[in-house]
Amino acid sequence: MARMSLKEKLEVLADAAKYDASCASSGTSKRDSRKGGIGSTEGMGICHAYAPDGRCISLLKILLTNYCTFDCHYCINRKSSNVRRARFTVDEVVDLTLGFYRRNYIEGLFLSSGIIASPDYTMEQLVEVARKLREEHGFKGYIHLKTIPDADGDLVRQAGLYADRVSINIEMPTEAGLKRLAPEKSVDRITGSMAGMKEAIVDARDASKRYRKAPRYAPAGQSTQMIIGADSATDGDIITRAAGLYQSYGMRRVYYSAFSPIPDASAVLPLKRPPLMREHRLYQSDWLIRFYGFDPHDIRDAADGGMLPLDIDPKLAWALKFREGFPVDVNRAERERLLRVPGLGVKAVKTILSTRRHRILRLDDVARLTQSVARVRPFIVAADWRPTLLTDRADLRRMLSPPAKQLELFAA
Ligand code: SF4
Image (tube, rainbow, N blue to C red; front, side, top):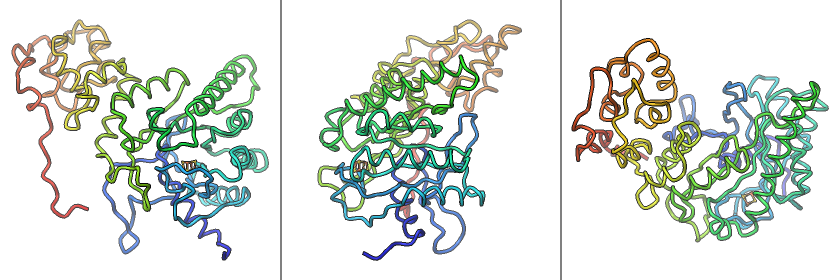
């Protein structure tokens, strides 16, 4: 086989990494400037992530290799897939990262890999890239390492010594889904790895409180990714699983990646990808669980037959089903109840709570805190506003649903 140039390897291994959603954005239309114009929404190679201090940073996003000894049905890099393969050496990844960093193209590295030789060997190589960057080159940029859950626990934990964030993909929302679509993977090994990482992160945090010079350890915590739409798991199943992962393993983020049909796909996969709006509704539900005091039962309650409606957001879906809990008095209700009002975000609720200490709130005051007061009105009482029969109107859902969009005739 002809030797590949570094540029060719980069083309293959940046493209192979684009399927990982852990730092990617999706949901936009396809635009590509290769045949003219400038800019592209389909690019690969550089992705964006949020650093622990909230900055948005650009990362070189690549695989160490797309060779893999596993055969996960949903993955383009699986053993039986007919894709072009490449493999970087550790030093090539280190040099590329430093070169791009010095040219100011990137502020960090997102590195994942197919499994070569053995999970331990692959994990060693990933850790070695991060170690060399930090210890031999003094690299201070952001590093996100994907770990290999089947690798030895000590090796996986070493990743946290050099990486800002580590991630271990749960892959499927249910154990049955994982068995069917990634038969070589095991839920127990994946969650065992997450538990080990959580313990190491907690220990390091304790140490940093006690000793000023305690080494940094995965300061951006751990995250995971779930593929949605490749198996029969419902939105209720997915959110229940995600809530368990946040609670049990201290996940910073669970990413939901709408399964996208891959070239040369396995016959056990669906032919069509789920609507991207489904991914969006799951992110909204995830937000409700993390910041709005919802629990997975609430999300299940908001869903019909386990699936969230696509035309309205999950908070509105829940409020419409439980109208007996509304309207909520913005001048008296406690924070938890205000957070349930569709159209009121965490910041708006904070402002309501602080403002009402000094004066009584009117509908206009609330209108200034929301994008659409029409969405809020049926669910609140203010000094000069009471919705009377509006909350219980049979056509309230229709009134609050965004108007259906005319489909573009020539859309891709
Ligand atoms: S182990 Fe990872 S790279 Fe290999 S086939 Fe499975 S998902 Fe793809």
